[in-house]
Length: 399
Ligand code: NDP
Image (tube, rainbow, N blue to C red; front, side, top):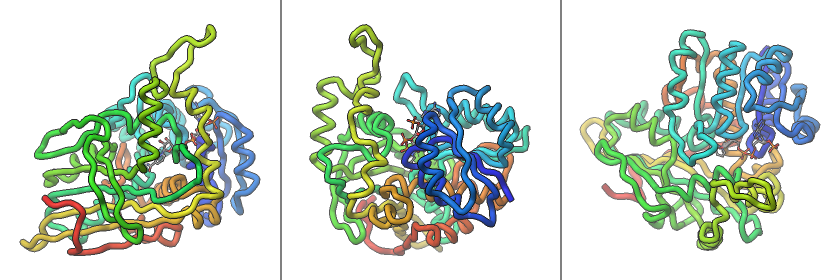
């Protein structure tokens, strides 16, 4: 049996720990380590049957991480702290000699700028060490990459148009709250949009391009074009793609609140002086907003995330829509989390278990579409995220 270390005890960490702790045939023990130990203890108290130990760690500190690994002796490490911690945790995994999994790509703290280059630069180091690093094992990135790989493997000779559509039609009853870490969320949506077309990246103003998209069992929702990190690896690995875009729904209420917060400078990541202390407005805002993990209990409705793909099979045009719908209430009953944490934590636990079992194992740094999608999708439904495929149905987007 294996020893699993999970770093980060937020919304996603909670789900990943609870799900992994039910894999008693695979794991003998789990270590949950995070900045605030009390949060680890609260999760550990309710998780099982695999025993969960806890520890305090500063994941920006490579030495502290290596020390913890030396005492716990993990066979695999799952990073569900924040994107800023990806590189120190990867460095610690290399120093100690253990496989690595995360759910979001590295982002420097001082600029809202996310891309894979920082982590792809570790390719040779992981190869030489004979270790696997699996990047982006959440839902998007994560399951969306696997959906695309599955479509390429079973349904298309060539994929031409990819639109990833992400809808949260849930209602948490608060006038404004973000569904995952507010800092990361707001940084993501206040930056320029970007998409890939005919070999080039095209930029848009933030939330400039939007369209109504019909989501299964939800209906029409206004969806906004954003840059999302899986586009970068997918267009690299599927060069037949002529266009790749990412869309996410936001309610009018959400956008109005965000606009006001932006206009008054509350979403800025530039430090300011406040009563003799340097603070970042966005971090201060995070402190006054509801904790994403607290939204679960009264959350109603569902999420729907999937890939709409157009391409060619046996010389004929084909369309494919592959998606999952997830109910906030089901997620809460299963793990005391809302669906946004759930749809990330479940694939994080699953991707980690595939690496731990050696089913997905390759020395080097890889994104999800670089592995065989079949074993992942076989287990995703039974683990709580069933998915559906519609072939040759009508898609939201023309050519
Ligand atoms: P939260 O903010 O809820 O949790 C983050 C956790 O990491 C907190 O427990 C926090 O500690 C801990 N942490 C932060 N900094 C450090 C540090 N220096 N050392 C140790 N622990 C630290 O975020 P989420 O759970 O919502 O998100 C977790 C990750 O998942 C993020 O990287 C996010 O980008 C990613 N994500 C990916 C998605 C996908 O589909 N691929 C979707 C949603 C999220 P403390 O409790 O003390 O604050």
